[in-house]
Amino acid sequence: MNIFRQHHEFLKTEGDILLKNARLGDAHALLRLQQLPAFAAPDNTAPADTLQLKNALHVIALENGYPSWNELKAALDSAAESSPLAVPGEAFYPKGYTTYWNIWFAKYSQAKKVLDEGKGYLLPYKHQYFIVEEHFVDSIGIPHTMPEWEAIGRDWVHPRRVKEWLRLNSVYERAVDARREKG
Image (cartoon, rainbow, N blue to C red; front, side, top):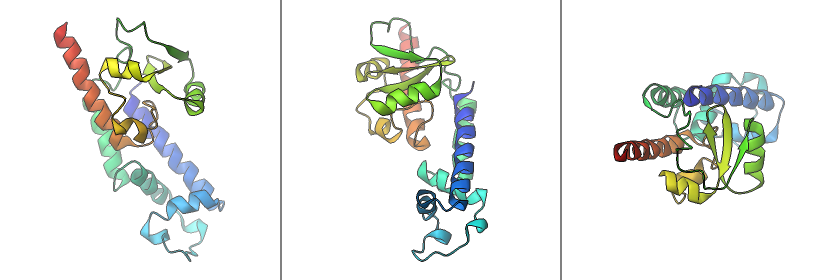
């Protein structure tokens, strides 16, 4: 499971959902589309059937910190190819960190629900998910004080903003490298 490719597919699905909701006249979806100049006019009377998937994907890109879908896709593709964390495996639960409080889940949807109901940080482990406290993310090398955590919704698996997620990913790559060098 390459987490970056998986998230790319997740975002494409989000684009499909946005498009369908906008075509149904959903006010929130139409408001999101107003980020695009063609749909920004307050008296926009463009028929919903003129909307295309590329419009929805452009909104998804903007919401993730990129000016276009192609740039968002390129950033995720690059991370998928180059990041040692692309297939997380046990990277987020290193040996010796078992003394911390955490909650484990077999399904992402369950973990996300618990995350949305309270505090914590949602991380991947092989084909499972777990929620930890701030002390855990501090100890593995991704300080909870970094504003990127809030930008991504404290969700490493399906973050709200890709640009900030990739910054956190770089920080954690360096922390993993430093742990490896210490041996």
